[in-house]
Image (cartoon, rainbow, N blue to C red; front, side):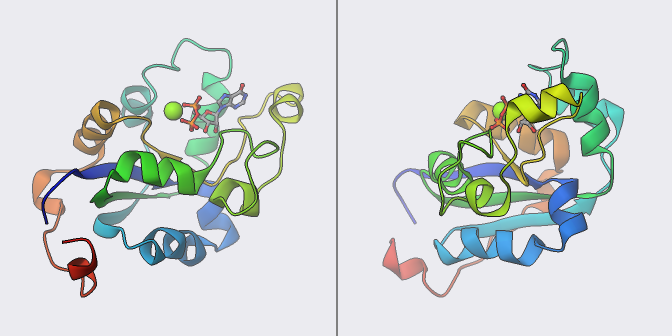
Length: 162
Ligand code: IDP
Ligand code: MG
């Protein structure tokens, strides 16, 4: 494959694992033709979360975000495809479930408002994380994965985008 093939980082958050919707969420990405290059279940540590959410560490909601992300294991992954960073963000939808459009992962599987979460001192549970830009993606991949955990193989439908 040539052209703007990118990889991005995703993490299905503990709410997705606890609700048993890992398969349905991954299906959204697979059916778009994106290639899963890596996938693993991980119990996030404080150290990894501080690196991963370095831009949010000093914010008011950080402690509740870290608490949420440690409630149970996450499914960390690397997904590859044409403009994968932007495409995955589009499939994931807006950060606030209340605003996330129907048809997006967050819009279809969650509904809470930021205001409601903030009032309760909780992070907003929105199913999945996806890197915001290509630099963030590469940084996050290096935080969560060793290169040898990331796999190269052909999907049978790769010829559609070759
Ligand atoms: P993103 O996940 O769409 O990239 P970010 O602004 O990077 O959104 O925030 C990271 C995560 O922190 C969000 O997905 C959400 O779980 C949580 N979060 C962000 N802002 C707030 C807030 O104002 N209140 C509660 N939780 C928040
Ligand atoms: Mg973000």
